[in-house]
Length: 296
Ligand SMILES: [Zn+2]
Ligand SMILES: [Zn+2]
Image (cartoon, rainbow, N blue to C red; front, side, top):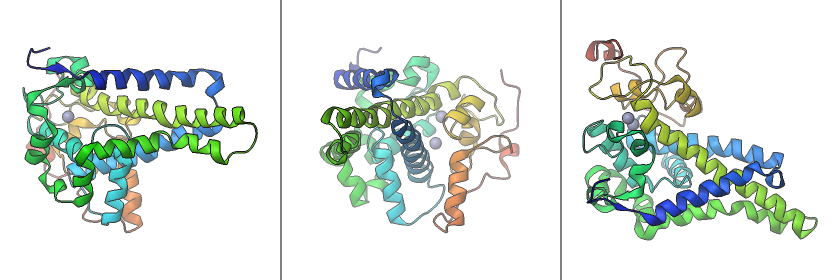
């Protein structure tokens, strides 16, 4: 670790705490089928709608347009994944595309797998301060009063905490003994909060680490991006990362029929409902722009 980088102790403690809470899901006392349902729905609602579609394909790359109420809803869902505010997330990701696998890339595995996966989140780098970063890369978002407000005084974190403890609300409305209600509320909290957060974290982080190391390349992009079928499935389409680097503004990341992209299928549903318009499709010139070469 460079001497200029300082450890973010608060973030490290937060990561350890959330992972430890997630591990409580292994204990039978915290199990409930309702918790499993909330976890599964949470993966889709917060991970797919919030991060993949909201933060990534819509806010970062403007791969489609939608009504402002829907954009803001997707952004709030993404905010509750504890992956920074919308504007800062967008700024980091745009810088990633700008310098993919070069020194200024915030999370390239050229500095090691663990660095790309999560170590970069644990250091205070002088050139990664939210203010200058959002000013440089996400000024369009800061013009929106909601995103600007989330940026101030860590308001995005308050939104996240409200979601985090929502499971315990059940204690107040559920009948039975206090212990039963507490156990049920704890189950919803552990499965729907920390466990879901940890799974979405590692899905997003694997796109930064795994898909810049392992997989096949359909396009000879100047970076090390790869299409990884496992991450393609686990991260709901975000693992077709070489396709994405070849054509960042496309709403569809899976290009071949078997490159399953469930985030894209959701955008197709939004199109059917008339909620997604000006949808960018993969450029027909990609194969000529990035002639295919053998994966080294
Ligand atoms: Zn990438
Ligand atoms: Zn991207």
